[in-house]
Image (cartoon, rainbow, N blue to C red; front, top):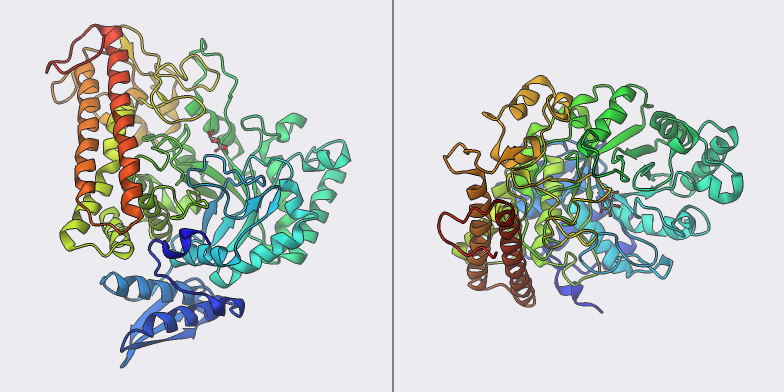
Length: 614
Ligand code: GCV
């Protein structure tokens, strides 16, 4: 058996014989509490209060605790109690309810066992074109998700490759069996579907206004929900990066989404429609088309046209999970459409679970800018795989843990969440726990400095998305340009430029459009500036670019030192050190490639005489 058994991240090892019998989250809650309190002198009991739904309340009793909660709330309450007691944190007081009703994990798993943008090994449940998994590990997965309140798992890649359509067809029984494994943890399945499915099944069309197509989807939905009555819904990527969609038939995205939504509405299913749509065949010579504008331009006119069970899923930024992007204007501008925020735990552009990159500070920024009331759901692209520690880098587990806690409470404190994860995962001496937590807390800003300072994203190696290549995407069709020349760098996205800033409510538009108020971290995302531009602190732009790359790399080296002094258990210590070596190599490469790139354009030497290669 693989080494995952002894490496269960923040959850303590718990053999799971009772799982065979557990049918409800209440059973699971009772089992978890019994196991946890077996080693203690106090006790805990559960009480089902259906009205609390996903909520719970923890109260102190004479001998210990009472967990009162709704159908799944009682289990979340049990986990919250265990989490608090194990990390010596205060037990939450009063009724606790999740902020977002749908807290999803989107898995980009393919049925051949690969995971698109997966950095933690092969799929946990697919191999060779079919399901293949250890049931005990899937239960442990359910336990991990439930312990931080995640309640939906989307089973397969949004790029639906053959034979994933079989999940709802001849493999439906297997899909149902998999759903049953997660049910005792309050985790419901969702499935990604291909918009052109009816066409591929021989109907001759997938036109959403065609009655036969509508009937085909309605029949499919009936068959599927008969077998899996609590299926959460379908997830769709349409007309995006060469995926099929309603545009093929001259139909709008509202027409496409509503057709599917109506097929699944009788069963209470959600139709989650991704808003990641842009022209990926752009001519780089065209300076008018601006990729960040694309989603708002397409969907804003459709606001109000979607059915009630459609959720438009929007990536947090207008590009694609870059280290720093402004909030997508769609998240602020769709007043009559249910929205889901999409984030990416898989570190596609953020170090690929090799470089340290703890996301809580980033989400704090994202959640605090978002008109939260418009957004009904959150989704995160999974960072999990078959690796022993589940997440490639053992510390990358902090991102899954924290995602769950932020989805439950978007006002969570990044530092507290990180520390709680560190404490639950490793029983380190206090001073070391602080060192680990601090390192994680600043890891994003370190990575940002050596890869994407001032909003200069996309200088990354094409396709693989690890390592520097300032020209990699510059003359490509993907619409991802920094447009550096010998005079200036960045893109003017104000009203005088591409007009992207006009997609924001006026306060944000003005903030970003003015050089006096635009945050440094997004300066070159919003503005095109000469290299001798004076930053607010008096440095020139070119010097700031050099400084950040030198500093980011030096800070990565400091993190390596701090890491080597931590008495982490094996094999996490060896794994973390090995990955840190690769991070240092990567950081040096970024520093030298990017600094050299700009030096060659400008001929300006570093003011401090540090080495830049000619
Ligand atoms: C699933 C980016 C990634 C793709 C991904 C896509 C998406 O372009 O590189 O691998 O495809 O986003 O989110 O649909």
